[in-house]
Image (tube, rainbow, N blue to C red):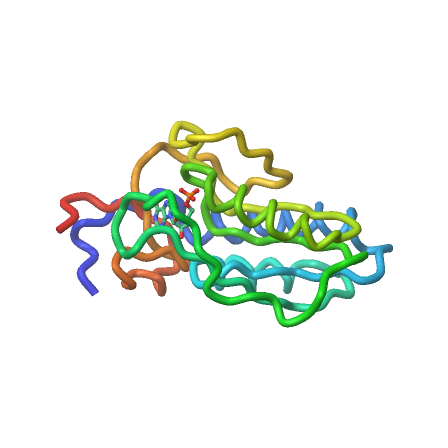
Length: 177
Ligand code: IMP
């Protein structure tokens, strides 16, 4: 893997300790609740999600949601599509949505609207990364791992044209293409 055009933004250790903090907060919030569904947004959240749910001392069920908006480029197409739906109804259940990154906010708002229409008992949003300067619409988030500058990043699940997801850290990419 060519790592010469990457600059580390968040180290593996920083990710681990932030996940422990977030896991503790979510455990406090949900440990006495029944019917908790943790939703992983594919593909980018896979690592964040699997690390997060292992730090949460909560009885939960796992579900997966697929959405696409980027078409392999570094710019959102602005058009969000559901590519994989949950396998179970979430009506009356506590849904926790795990996203890798909120950039324009369009994807998160689309998912919130879509899931809310299924009448969950609660809907909680958790994002590993948030780029406040890239927002194109108001987007309310419950838990944020790290606020980052408006630069394209890869690693720890996040990709550029399908690559770099397996890096254990998050890096800015320069000289794309
Ligand atoms: P939004 O709809 O613009 O907020 O984009 C959300 C989705 O775009 C995320 O789930 C990511 O898949 C992708 N995305 C946004 N910014 C980045 C980035 O810097 N690197 C990799 N993927 C990104």
